[in-house]
Length: 404
Image (cartoon, rainbow, N blue to C red; front, side, top):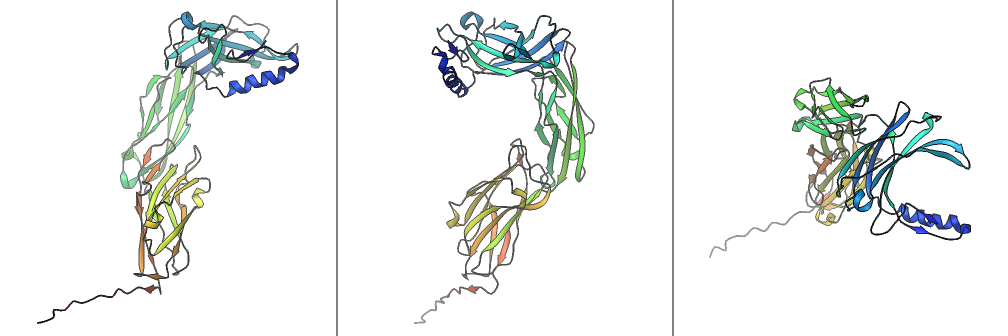
């Protein structure tokens, strides 16, 4: 008999074991997980203590009485035993005696019996949730997770927040704390322009850091938050968050260059960035009689960005551009090219200059940080001058009274 997590069971010739088992594993890997598990473990005396948080995403109420749902901790040691490289040293488990509804959360602490003769630095723990689906006799694994060493993490541990001096307002950014579910934390900032909401709570509560714009000086300044977490069973951890706040103008502007009528013109789009911009969208409006066939390339500040161009309305003089950096990346502080838009220019034009402005069609103007929060910015278009162009002259007809 060969089985995967219990979802599929098969029998067959041992000679094709690898092929049969490989198919079972491949099928299992594409199944979506039916639960989310967050787990931590630590040594307490001669026992391993495991903290587990189970989030039921199965769509089924989990209960020991109805589908034998349970939570297991498999504690194994990296040790050569027989033909294997590891051995299970303990497997404490706990029935879900209270029904866990879909989207519900269950937290539990599991302790092993006293362990002896083990290499503690070679011990690992996997937490598993399983149940019996339907009327079948086989257990099926909802999800499994490797238990991390018990501790406190702060994400992100460093944070850059730009405050646009042209639209002065406080900025609030969410922070994620993670650790054993039994932890409670407090937060203490070291500068008055940093405010934590809340400033103490259980580990499951997500705090927010607010940068008070009125307390900032022009330019960059640094502050720190100390997070301290404790539990009733003796855990104590400390982590730090470093916040760099930058007060200054954020701006998008088009930069005019010399125009040779009938030749392409490259129009740089420059961003005065504060260093926390992650995605930028905007549209350009232009006269399609004088400028046409736009093409867009990332600028020197956006070499790592994904560029999306909407030229569906280019014939009407509208062009949309979006630049998105990879996750956790931001554009560098200072003035740098965001994009370069190249137009074909007309030889014969109705007037000696034309303007290129920022607009919201076909893409709305938007700048967001790495958390998806909107940022403010000023925009500034430009005027392109067509020297020595052949200017179309409009014939004006003057109507005169016949004077009968």
